[in-house]
Length: 228
Image (cartoon, rainbow, N blue to C red; front, side):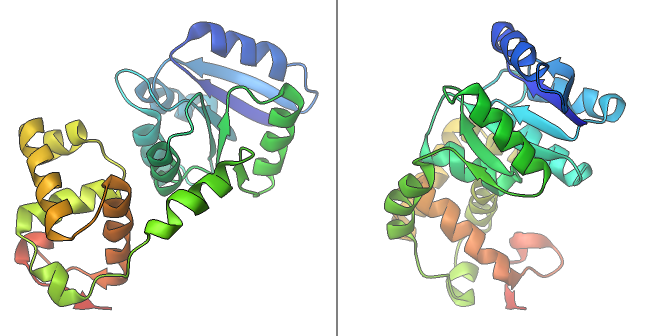
């Protein structure tokens, strides 16, 4: 039996999904949550195998909840179920640990099969999204940075870049770094200009390429990066 937790800020969507999925003989909908924080609160008591996670929700987004849940409960698999096929939503969801990205308009039988395949360890992507990423993101991919280039970034810009790579929004970055959101936007603009990149997607790709380097004790503020 596959235990499911449904997370969506629209109660009607949760109810509709529960009604459809409960008809499957191998599914059990163990609970619903209206935002990411509520999902995190319910996980320890409900023990879901798979979470169907919306992205854009109040209190805590699906991306942040996915990151926190997959870090603390790596055995739980998360499938994003969203209305939006935005490049950044897809990229950040997968970076946060989601096993797939599906759209809410998909037929119920296909959703059920995607859940079963996810439970067996297969990643899932809505039709057309892989091609979308390949045509829009991959051509914009950049050469991994060299250590001197990273070290030359101001310490605060390194912090902002690192958090962009983790999928955080400007508001979340501002909260973590104790900055005004407008200040974070300024740092993002500086990074784009300094690194001659076109958009936030390229910044995220750049930031994640930094993972091949180790950062000495003291974090990015030390301004030194060494190759692993």
